[in-house]
Image (cartoon, rainbow, N blue to C red):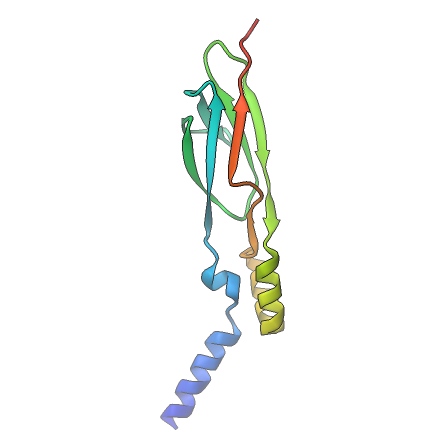
Length: 124
């Protein structure tokens, strides 16, 4: 009886989880650089450092990256998300429940870029 409970419990856990929820990183690293270096980096309006910098950003949302440096015009770049096709395929092979779990939690998503750069132009 006890082994049946254990097997049932393990099966329930495996059926209600999915590949991306278990194994995908919840943050992605984004390398941010500028020419010239030393620009302040703002992510969705919050100061996050000075270029060059590596940021850890949540994988399930988009960001506006703004570069600011005295004497130069500000530059903005957008980083979006994309669905990792590998996670989708693994979930489909696992059945309907993993697909539903990963789709609803956003665990399939990742940033569409690993690095972002900007060339700052001097103000007139």
